[in-house]
Image (tube, rainbow, N blue to C red; front, top):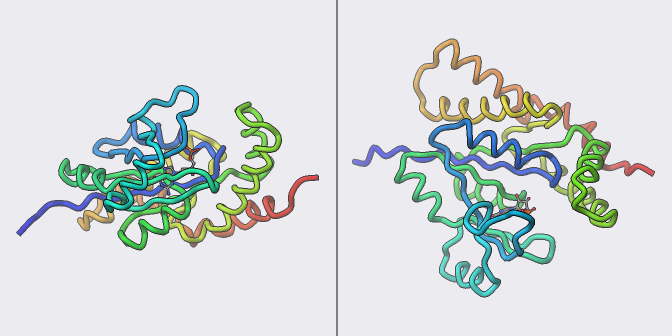
Length: 232
Ligand code: 5GP
């Protein structure tokens, strides 16, 4: 009988400009035995992005061949423009190494993964309010006014799906959010290990539990409201 440990699969989703990439990068640097699933996409590389690092950049034909060969655990066609997909092989490789796996994917992808892997742990990262997100997008200086408006609208639609996630992380102060994200990852490892916990470990679980959907819901309601009433 196999005693192989199943990887814990973590899904992180967030609207653009929520600070997700920074949180994910810190998490990966601080957490042993956590692999990142490098997605495939048909969108072209941006800035300093490199093939095989942030994404595998492929042409549409190749992506569609991979769909036909059932190579994806999930995939989505986003913004009416580009395919994004999680290759099955990353899950196999993580399992072979005895590691866990982190997916940075959108709301549709998260729903597909949850259906296939019900034990996957999903985390939604939120900006503290619409104004902060708008300010962060402007400060980044990457987008025109029109694109910023579109991103804010997309953010609202994504945030409407917050209650499909297990954990909610409101990214107000980066350092605090980063510690909380690490606590969530650690707490789920502890929980899925099924062993009794020390007092120190229980504290980690308590910190993570503050971000569970049921506890976080009252904090999300005003954020969502700030997105539903656009600034004039
Ligand atoms: P960007 O083009 O800005 O890198 O990413 C756009 C969106 O695609 C982000 O919300 C990101 O999480 C999502 N995404 C990246 N990889 C995947 C993937 O493999 N599957 C799905 N469903 N979404 C992805």
